[in-house]
Length: 438
Ligand SMILES: Nc1ncnc2c1ncn2[C@@H]1O[C@H](COP(=O)(O)OP(=O)(O)OP(=O)(O)O)[C@@H](O)[C@H]1O
Image (tube, rainbow, N blue to C red; front, side, top):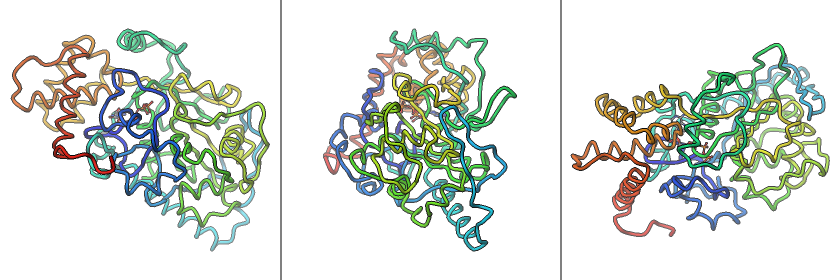
């Protein structure tokens, strides 16, 4: 995900350095997770989980994790079918029935606490130079994305505009799927969906989707059969790459308020682990040869835990959602994946909706929309949400500040204006002084 001028991810989550490079055109976005991948390289080797360092983190990092070590739970749907993907072994779900009422109410409390905590972390998005936590409400700016089941062909190496133009031509066989439905069985032919892999190019909205999914769950709106939604950013996991953990202790590291949870609880709840940004992971996931782990208290390296979780050896009933840019998705063997989805960006009507949601000034949004429609390359590029954001920043600045001269029509124009706006913002914020910590 990207943190930018207004919207985007909660500033309460931090991120670690980006490994895979963004598209050249957008990699320098100041204040975004992409822009930071150069600046923050020194954090890569830190062994301190980012929730520990978040308070001193001034760069609005974006990834999923908790500033105060909060987490995520919910109640267990005993009626749901057990996980049986090709990769997983059959899961046992004993436990809940044997739970004492006191135990159950304690657990419910943890779940509710976790929901509140996740809601706090997901409801705001922070972009660019905005202070963490000062961002916009996600629900205000979140625009529905076009997501399909299955994926388009090979990784594309063409120029962005040509690539996107092709992508935007809707294939008649594309099956749209709503983000909140990705674990639902949608036809009789489908079996239980345990592992979902969501692909999408840089800036297309994968992290935003994860955030929206989590928020809807935390607010009690969607997927209430899931007991506990556990977003874990792959960038965050890099930080403990060299440490040994059990799955239980891993959760404690990233979600310290889950300390009360015992190993048995993990096996009776319906958990959803979300690994956001596989492309940023520095683990080598050895699916063919690894230690077999089925006990949540067994200690091993983090990559081994991940592989066992994805394969279903560890917590076979847990749902797994992995998001990745296309070039890194091959790390997960197809046999382990029950559903592939692809975030395709905005359709033409969603592009317009994005600008309408973003600006309360109706006249401004109309002018911006008509300018974009008049420029073929801008219009095509707006398929990618992060590009909509860049366009919004630039055009808002130019249209509201009595700017003479022509509005940008080419990508080069737009990017150079964007750089100027960001430099101006940086000056306003730091008054020519160095950013603290730099
Ligand atoms: N559904 C959406 N509604 C409104 N804005 C969005 C949406 N999705 C994405 N954006 C905008 O695009 C930016 C990039 O989105 P996001 O970080 O989710 O992309 P990503 O696919 O995770 O990218 P990467 O592969 O680089 O991690 C967001 O910061 C936000 O400005």
